[in-house]
Structure formats: structure tokens, C-alpha cells
Image (cartoon, rainbow, N blue to C red; front, side, top):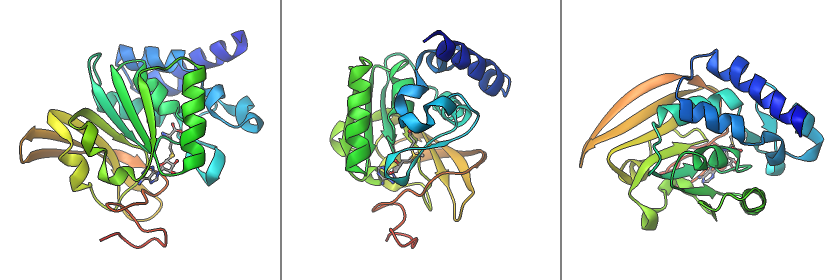
Amino acid sequence: MKTDSMARERMVDVQIARRGVRDPSVLAAMRSVPRERFVPSKVAEFAYEDSPLPIEAGQTISQPYIVAAMVEAAEIGAGDKVLEVGAGSGYAAAVVAQIAERVIAIERHEELASLARRRLAELGYDNVEVREGDGSVGVSEEAPFDAILVAAGGPSVPEALKHQLKIGGRLVIPIGEGGVQTLCKVVRSGPDQFEEERIGAVRFVPLIGEQGWQEDGRRSA
Ligand code: SAM
């Protein structure tokens, strides 16, 4: 619909480019993915607002600016194979799929994984595979990845994810206790060498899993 594409253009100009996201491939991807198709119909009218929105299973679709900033930080290129942990609605996976060659997206809630799979198929994203499971341990059989994006906050950077990066690969993940986390970027500079950089403060739902948090809020072993 024309009004949705106009709202999307405005979202990219006002919420994303003006806040400093510069990568042309990220801006183009954000201009092309219909966010209203990834949210429940009762909140579709708010799809281009500057905020996260509630989705099924008590989870959220991230704020558009945060999606753009994370994708830019991950420096995704055209030939890349990317893992997204916390597929949720499938929206961020669609944004990444506009740029990368192949995307594996993993989600712990079966309901969300199947909805995301359906939405992505309806929109013709045939380079994304949505799996159900615990992404805190990555997807070892598909590793190594050029980039890994984690859309849920963990207590620390999961070792499994670091070791599923290619040399030169980038991992972007929110880390920390409580409601506010620090967005971290980890670059694998050698077989056992990792450079860590802090990007800024963010607010994400918890990463629940073997290398994240337990359901009761305690740190997993
Ligand atoms: N990227 C999503 C989007 O575009 O809609 C936003 C995802 S939401 C902020 C975070 C998601 O991470 C939730 O759907 C949650 O169920 C999922 N999640 C949390 N821990 C997970 C884990 N260990 N493995 C896979 N998914 C996980």
C-alpha cells in the first residue's frame, strides 16, 4: 500500500538515517521490508512508529532503529552467511536477507518460529531458514558464519557463538544484568583472538538458554 511505503520512507529518514546509520545497503533494506506484515494485525497501524511492538508469545519486535544499528554494526556483505538468534517475528531476518546471501534464524518459541517462517515465505524470502531451538549455543552444523546477530540479552557473550564465527566474523549481542544491557560487538580476529567493543545501551528481552539465562532469571551454568 502506498501509505505504508510512504510511512516506511519517513521511518528510515527520520528515525534511522538522521540518527547516524549510514550504510546504504542497510538503509535500502529498511526501506524495502514491510514491517506491518510482521506484527499482529491489531498493532499493524503502529508498524512505523519509533518503538518496539508486542508480538505473539509475549515477545516483541525490536525498534526499527535498533535493528538497523545492529545490522550496520555487523557489517553484513552480499555474499555473507548470517545467523540471527531470536527470530521473533522474522522482521530482522528479512532485513538481513535483503543484504546477505543466506540467513539462518533461530527462535525458541515454536509458535513464533512457524509464524516467522510463514510470513517470510509469503513475502518470497527464499534465502532465510527459520529453525526452532536454543540459539544461545548457535547452530554448529551451519557454522562458520560471517556474522551473528543476537536479538535477546545474555549475561555474557556465549563462547559457542564466538567460536561459530569465521576469522574476521562479527557478533553483535546485548549483554548485562537487568532491564538495560550493553550492546557489544565481538570480532574474531584469529582462531582464539576476539576483539570486543561496546556500542551503546539497549533494552532487550532475555536470552533464555544453555549459554544465557534460565527461565527463573538465574544465570545458566
Ligand atoms: N529479531 C526479532 C524480530 O525482528 O521480531 C525480535 C526478537 S525479540 C526482541 C527476541 C526473541 O528472542 C524472542 O522472540 C525470544 O523468544 C527469542 N529468544 C530468547 N532466547 C532465545 C534463545 N536462546 N534461542 C532462540 N530465541 C531466543
